[in-house]
Length: 372
Image 1 (cartoon, rainbow, N blue to C red):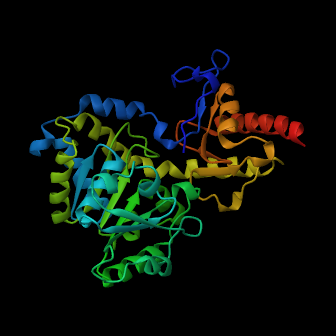
Image 2 (image 1 turned 180 degrees about the vertical axis):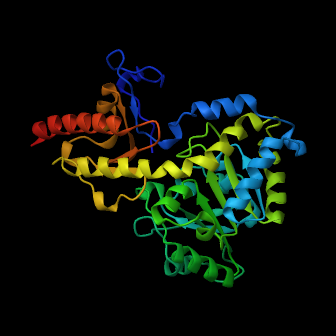
Image 3 (image 1 turned 90 degrees about the vertical axis):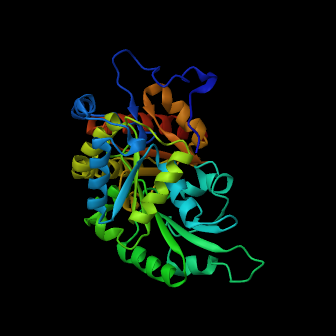
């Protein structure tokens, strides 16, 4: 996955937009680009703070308490990023030389700078799942035999929703079966739930039920929920006590961090209720793209806020397509050689989606004519 900029790097500054004056950018690269609401900014300004490394920040403590309650876990910890939350969890559940079973296209395998190897000292055991979703049979086949000269399997890491598979969603019964079987095999299960609330909305199920058998869960506050920064990890009290140690070791002790925890608390309490709007916009966007002859997408498979389409028939690869689209003020992102990803979020409304469709169609038709 490459963060594309227009040729010549004239758009290396993300605030510099090559569009006509007054034309707003439709930034669909990711839901990580969301900006905090005015209400969040007011909450941040008014936040009661203390030293969180000493456990004295009341706003952080309140956020952690609510996250644990919402997920039905004993405790929670505020961390600077989802990557750190996943790494801390992997570090706790593994020893040096262990293997972590994960889906081939999962974030922990592709986009966390091999931190599970470089820092936690273990290796990913990547398995290809159908539409990004692993079943127990696939996981079971990847478990190392208990022989002293083989690596030891220690952890299963699931991702819900599955980002690079187009925001696909794990059925809850599938997660429960994986957890039950993994525990019987002596393995722990960590959920990379960066977009778990999107999955919750798609399934119409509470996150506490969806994740109740997982040993640990990471959830992002700074994607679709709209907070400016931060993630949470939830689990048992013992797990969180260990997590606090590793957070400090990895440089994540943030002192008077209530000023950002306040936005996270508001995001956690209020934002899930509006995620259906992002899903509706993504479905609308996918259905529009499906009507463009030179682009390929299964719009029926879009269930959450991620849309991935194939641009091969335009004669451009995904980087070229995104670079050509960028000057129109519609920003997209490549995820594979011919795969372009668009992610809907609360800073792009239906008008923005329609403008994106217009520009995508214009670009695709122009290049389809040239290559036909």
